[in-house]
Length: 414
Image (tube, rainbow, N blue to C red):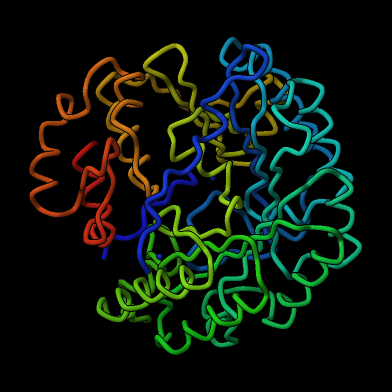
């Protein structure tokens, strides 16, 4: 099954085909291009066996030093032409477990970002990823006072056995308590991450997770199928036969059931794995999928700049200690850099936008690249005949069948 393609490197019943608002980072603010700011905090209490993100289980972390490095790296970035004349459209603290840091530390980083760049709105979407086992009412209130406007809870499951299998340090009761505490702290924009196709999970277990999540009424739900990424403990356990994946038919059934249950409850399926109440789609992630510019700060963070055309990207040192050393010595920690070809930029624009339920407008592709998308990718005709892509009005988008083969479709544009 190929329904997941992870777009964080920070990836629905009838599909809602109404066009989604363009990502903010493609817009302009006071005459300058806007971008999304991603801040990576790599520390965790423990490493989950399925996680392939740049995260490290530690008992102590150098919080003041790391925050100072984030601010120093932002200052250096603000002096570069890619970002110096930009405005911030969204901010996202990802990890790792950003909620391990104190609210005062998060507030200091936000204050620095506000000093360095204009913001496109006073009520900017500022997301903090949060492990329910790392927060209480006081800490959540502190995050809200620091300026965080959106919490993304790594719930993953409400089933004790599946939480244990996934290596989560919180219980279902702790997750529910943390969600209530976030509401009491004034957060009106909450997201839950949930995982299905966990070894040993039945469709009934997954239905129960969805029902509990809906009863808690978040504004946004991300529902991902478990993947066995190389380098993770789960990948090794699968190869050794220590764990057995959920059968593909059951996985597909969970995926399709997720779409119908959440759509019926008023959560628009705006992306392959993401569902939101009206007006609550994650603007930060939409910017990734709309091929907008983003600045990644922190150990292992990735960045993409559309200027100069056709664009370029780079990645930071993954090791937190090496990251701290290089930022201290050089003001940055770039470990790799790549200038895209026109062909790469075109392909990435198409497959990223195809993650969204409404796909992309042919006119937007032409405006960006100066030619028709069908001329750039003649195989669109074959994909249409195969029933995995369709053109509705002026928009290209995945079909229901295409959603089940998304990775295969995307690979044709790489």
